[in-house]
Amino acid sequence: MFKNSLKLIQNDFFNSFKFSIIIVFFFLFLKIIASYYYYFTYELDIFNLSNVFGGYIKSLYLDQEFKSCIEDNQFTIFDGELVSCSYSTRMPILPYLYFLFTFFSTEYFTIAIFKNILLSLTFLLLLRIFYKKFILINQKTFYVINFLLLFIFISPSIIKHSANISYEEGIILELLILWSMFFLICAYFISKNLFVKNEYTPIIVITLSTVIYFTKASMLLCLILSIILSLYWFQKQKNYKIIITIIISCSLILSWGYRNLKLSNSFNIGSSINWVLGYYGLNNTALKIYPEIALDQIFFAESFTLKNNEIIINNDNVDVVFENEWIKNEYYKNKSLDWVNENPLKFIKLSIKKFYNFFIYLKKTPFSVGPDVNLEYERYSFQQFVVFIWLLFGRLSTLILLFMIFKSWKKEKFLCSFIILMCGAYSAPYLIGFNYERHITPFIVMTILSNIMLFSIKNINNSNLKK
Image (cartoon, rainbow, N blue to C red):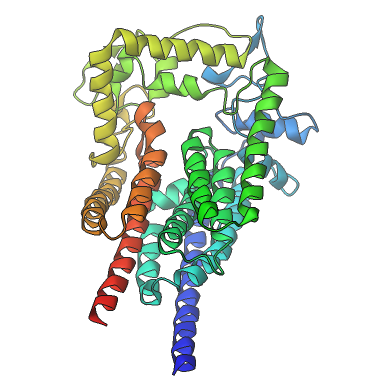
């Protein structure tokens, strides 16, 4: 009887995983199609990648150290009147990854294909491990997971951001999906004392969050939360592999900080543009143009035209030359905090706007990457509609999650607490600084995965009650 049940579970597993393979490769196909649309006719090479990334890749390609010595808008550092080098404006994963691909090609499209293939194979490998763990919870929900993964992967927003190579979401979006899955199942195993044969679950959680952090520094809270969850595991089961993984992760962070200390006489474990980006969303002009217009335009435009044709004069474009990236970061940190202290009501009003945009708003943000909204808004009306559908589904998922947490709180307090902490750790930096639709999309996926976990546990509890 037991052997027959085990065989049925195994068959269920293999059938569902076969379908998962089809879904992941279908998603890979969609990513390649999107990359073809964005990059196939792109004439510049990867060394021209925006947001300073290209400078780092070029430096690595020329067998130099990890640095960027190019002019790139508001991120540029000067030595007198000449462009100087920055060493920490970006975290190292993305530049190093694309640099490795330059051994095969320096074209945008080819780099995008390699990146998409690598992430899809990584996703498939870790998904297989996840399924083997998830079978301990509820094998009947494999098909629910597959259905929702398919829904996630055919979302134009997911496809667009995953296919992109010019910002970090092109890498971390799929990794955040995996991190969320393993984070949730790790929290569940801890709450139920299911440690046997699951010892690698917290190790995967820490490893994924470390890679995500070294891709985007704002994900520090997700890494810290992963370490806290893993320490809970260690408290209940003395698995020293977890401690070794935590030590390795912290050592990498400290090594990055020590490197920055040697180069700048200042110990910093993050990126030297954290507060430059923070300033995007902490000034008077941002209050007036957010969320309609991309906030980096504050560094360039003299004025902005909103959708209602209102003209906003830019009084926050700071034309200051910096000879050191950390001095620049400190300058914008002070400028941002001074604005908060001097304008508490405006800060609250802008924070409400950010909260509304992140959790409630149903339109694509920003409407425009340029200073005139009306030049782009009508032109991309179909895109607005597609994003509306995605955000509407995401808002419904968030409401369902709140309801599921409320219903599950008494029996699954530990898991529900860490679901809230997981969502909070991800969203906090975007609520402090600024958030666009591409930042909201991973959060929506987190709510979907959290709902799957709570739904699965509810089914188990109901089954146990019937027995």
